[in-house]
Length: 472
Figure 1 (cartoon, rainbow, N blue to C red):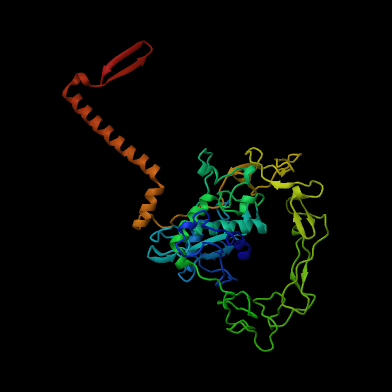
Figure 2 (cartoon, rainbow, N blue to C red; figure 1 turned 135 degrees about the vertical axis):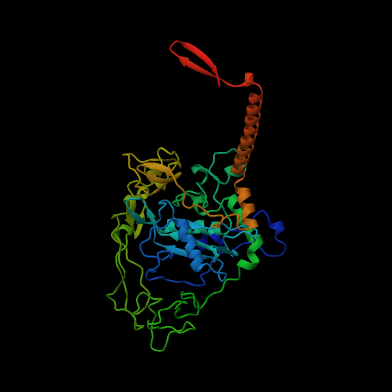
């Protein structure tokens, strides 16, 4: 997953068009992510408040906060929770704290520590899930969707907010939220993208500008040269035979030493090789290392008996039905629109009324519903959110958090709060001034009425016989 996300990030020149401001530091290019540590939680925590509690249905914001208390760390640029949970907010697929170019505001990469209710937390954390929720059921996201969600949340952690969604003639806004004909929505759109359009895996000019500002401030602290291998991160890399990672069960037999070399007599490590036994030997050739899934066009993958790696899963028969009315072809599930009998490309209709219909793009580039009133199932992403009962409901993939503590707990937080809530504060201030003026006028008016009875209000009583007037 990280390698695929790096394919989105590393080609980008964040200094593009701004090379005159480099000042000898080198271009902001080939910048991505390396795994330093992997922690696998194989059993739930007994505490209901722990982020890995067993049965609790979490609100995503609360889960991210608890994760920050437990796992946020100054030893890492970012700490990422990968989960299979779904959330109370059914549209949420990920959540991250937004990074800022100023060091006094917490959130995102290399965030400073904050105190909340007496507890210290580093909020350089984010989360993503591999399951979506349609209220009636949950279902797994496909690989492309997961990659887009993760790349999106990393974008927040690097300083990119959501792209604008309003209709505007402002060229700066328009170029950051193009329509379907101009390549589709960019990666930082607030609405989850399916990956059908070329812009879905690209950063908009707005995002590039915001990220460049954060990188300019934090690159010396947050980034370092990539190492070819790092013994202790749980991944077998160049020059390593195995890698236990940093968290191992003390009762588990280890096949790997602290230098990432296999012990004498060990052929593999079950922590790194699926086709490896607990006694550090290769599994036999009848052992199924990865069960097949016909909906993904894959048959059972079986160990070969002479290596610890699980061979690629063989394909099922071509033409077999797969996910979302797709069709299997050479082990790949082709989307409905790409079935041989249709020969088009998948797309999402931009028209809100048609957005939850199954749509295909023809060779002329026109995206239109397929005949027969085929609808997308609940939970599938549409042009402005998520399909619910055949209607596109405006829901966002995440509610990016600027600051998870009270904004008044620090000067920096207060400044951010004032800047981001200026309209609401102006309305409140105007209301207070209006109320004060109103009461001054009413009090003066009441005083004058008491001094001169002729100035008192008069009530008008309407009856069947006519209108009667009487003094207050």
